[in-house]
Length: 427
Image (tube, rainbow, N blue to C red; front, side, top):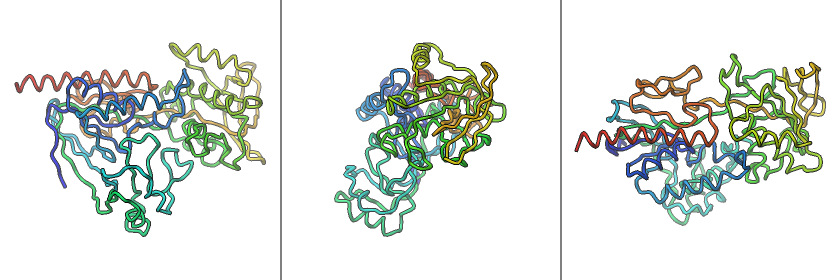
C-alpha cells in the first residue's frame, strides 16, 4: 500500500527521542505541520531509558511527561511509530520521502488494559532494558509509552499465542492481518534526529565484555539501578545474582581512541559520577565506587557536581587507563593497570565493572538517504550541501540531554525558515 500525505510546507522529523520530540514541538507550536517518524514502537529514545539526569539527579519522567502532553494536545503533529525512512528525493523546499511502517498488530482501539499480555506465554528479549531481561511477546514498550498501545512481537504471528492475544482482547484491538505499509511524504524540510547508540563494548577486547558476565556497560547499569528495570532497582551481579557493592567505573571505554571512537563522547564522565550516587544510595554503609579515568571532563556548571563526588569518602579516583580485565575464581572482574599518580601497578578485583562506553550516531551520515556531509565519526555536519536536511541532537555530535535539546531547537528554526520561504513563494 502506498499513501501520499503532507505538503512541501510540512516539516518531517526523523527520530522520536528527546531531540526529535523537541524539534517537532517547536515547529508545530509556531503553526507548522509536522510528521514525526520513529523506528521504535514508542517515543522517548535513550532519554526514556535513563534512571536519572545529572547534575540534579531528577528523573527523566517529568521532562518527558511534559513533552508527551504537548504532543497529545497538538493536532499539527502526526506521529508514525515502527517507521523508518527508506529514501529522500528532491531538494530544499520540495522533498519526497519514502517511509516504511512495520505492522504493530494492535490498532487504535487499544486501551492498554494488558489482557493480551497476560494471555500470551512466549517471552522475548526486552530491548528497553538492553536485553538484560525478557518480557511477554504482547507488551507495552515501557510504562510511559506513547502511543499508549500494546505491540505484538512478530515472532508469535501465526502461532497459538497470537490467537490467544486476539481472543483475550475485549476491544477488537488485535489485528493479526496488519501488513507493512509504504508512505510517500512531501516535505519542505527534514530534521534528522536519529540519536545515538552505545559503542559496541565487545570490540574493546582487553575488557572482556561478552566474555566476563560481571563486565557491563554504563547504559546497562542505568537500567539495573532503575526501580522499573529488570532487577527492580537492585544492583546485582549478572553472574550469580549477588549484590554488587564494590564497583569499578572505567572511563573512555572506546572514546578518545584511534582504534575505536576518535572523539570524546562528553557525557561519559558525568554519567559515571552520577552512577556513584546510585551505589551510595543502595548501599550507604558499605558501597564502594572506583573511577578509573584519563581526565574528568566536567564542563560548565558540572564542576560543582564533580567536586561533591570527589568529597564522597565512598568514591576513589584512580588516574589510569585500565590495560586489561581478567576474571578470578570468584567471578570478580579484576582490573589491571598502572596508576599514573605515583606509577604504581594495580591488580584490583571488583564485584562489577561498568564500562563508560562512548556515543556514536545511530545512523551514520553516509547512510542517510540523500547526499549528507558527515565528519570522520559519522556525525552530520552543518553544510550547505545538505540542502534542507538539518541534523539535530546526537545525530550531529556527542551531546548530553540539555545540549541535544538546544541543538534540536536550532534545527527546528532552520527548518521553519525553509518552509516559510516555500509558503511565501507560493503565495
